[in-house]
Amino acid sequence: MDLAHLIDHTLLKPTCTFSDVEKTCREAIEHNFAAVCLPPYYVKNAKSLLQDSTVKVATVIGYPSGYATTAAKVEEIKRAVDEEVDELDVVVNLCAVKNGNWNYVKNEMESLTTACHMRGKIIKTIIGAGLLTNEELLKIAEICASVGVDFVNTSTGIEGQGASVEVVSLLRKNLPAKMKIKALGGIQDKQFAEMLIQAGADRLGCSASIQIIAG
Image (cartoon, rainbow, N blue to C red; front, side):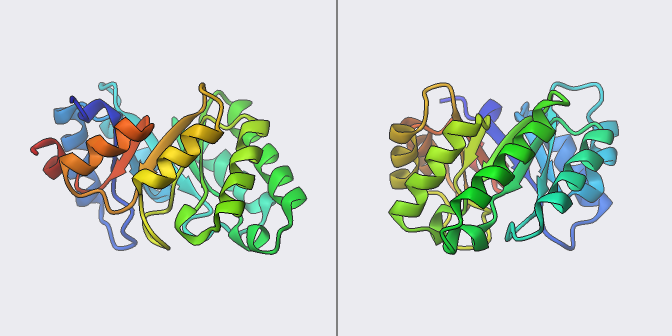
């Protein structure tokens, strides 16, 4: 299985430097990864480094805990879009989820999805599946389907359990066929990556991308 074009080559360490970003972008071009996923601080740099390639630039919004206000997240999106980001990985408000405030969750997701789609950008909603009960997971999947996000991302890769075949399978069964799934967190080898794709993932978020495609 050719995995490279399904991978978001990810660099989100808070201490990453411009040299790290340059290396990540070079690797993404060399291996034809789908995108690089970087902190908002580096969006403009990455667009410049990748301008002659097909690699997309993605960034994170409300990362990693998602409990910033909706207005703050919308402003983050606007800034990233102004700097020509292609895809936005937006963290759901887990505080609202854990309080069962589903109206807030839905209203926020509608606002963020509109902010991305009005500017022609892809929104990938990070749901933090490893921190959720099955009931919460299914409710978020229902909301994602209703507001029309482009991708549902399994986790932040930092908090709670990372990607799992079980979660990807559950999401695939409960999301519209046109809605895509991005699995991320703890993907370290090709075998596991292929299992996630077979379970229904359309994209993988990986920092060990080179190791994975090398098998």
